[in-house]
Image (cartoon, rainbow, N blue to C red; front, side, top):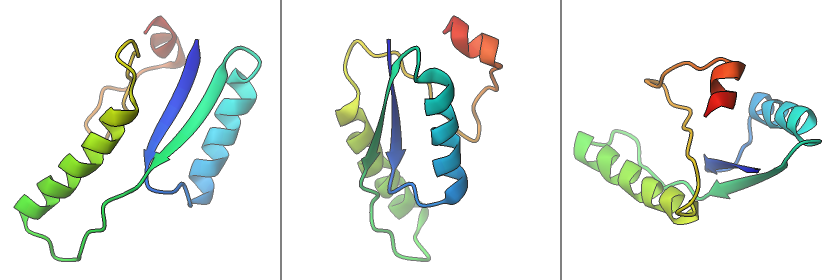
Length: 91
């Protein structure tokens, strides 16, 4: 099994770098972990709802281009379902 973490934009924040380092430390002995950062879309301030959707669409296409057809995809999103470590392992 190989784990790929896809991120939109550069992982600049210290807490994200620390989180990824922790995943690599814990999972590294068992699997290969790749980090892929896709470019974020330059977005002006005060965008309309339509412009926000266009930005999301472009970034989404960049993400989809990096996902192989046979991949299992697990997303980390605000409105997503919380999984325990055990629940994640079942997926």
